[in-house]
Image (spheres, rainbow, N blue to C red):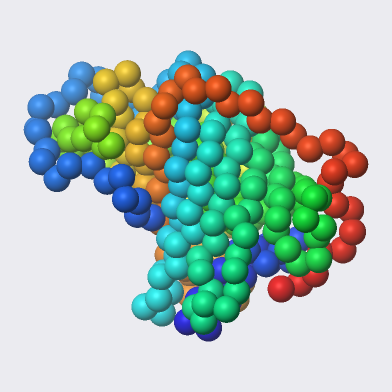
Length: 275
């Protein structure tokens, strides 16, 4: 368990020395084999554009890390505006193994090229935000923040190079089409929006491999309802890559998503304590 705690700290260690899977909304096991119209690879490469057309949604995230037989899961929930590329998530860290430390949820604001965090501890005043330049992160913030940016997760699918239709099923009461495949982060970065191009390029270079296996579930409007990526992450503290499963659930499309970024005076400019 001590080794796993080092892994969790390592993720936030990549963020200015900051100290920072599966979901309960899985679909039905009953699957229909009725094939959908359209080529699977082409359909999946266009899913990010479909989200932009949808405008906004609520999101639930889960980041599950496994090493040495131990698993740690970080969960988040919030809203995302796909047109403005702005999101707000409340991220809950795993409970301290000894049960002695009460960890407050961390509020994260996702913006083009930046990650803002509040209540992150390590000497940062409770009313201040920490700003992190995503361009400095070797994983493009697909892992480091404890949650994968929902739009960045969708843009990973722009790099889809193989995919198969698994069947029809349900996710949280919505009828969906299940696809399984693999994406290449280098290709994804070439075709991503300006907001995510640099981040995905960094991830392609920083992960143990640029190949990302995935399972994705699309509703009849072509919108992502559930997306699960499997990353292989090198955090600098382990001899071997850490297996990371990132799951994103999207729902309540069109919901108001008023995300306001901090004013300059609300951003902490002091030294971050190393945890």
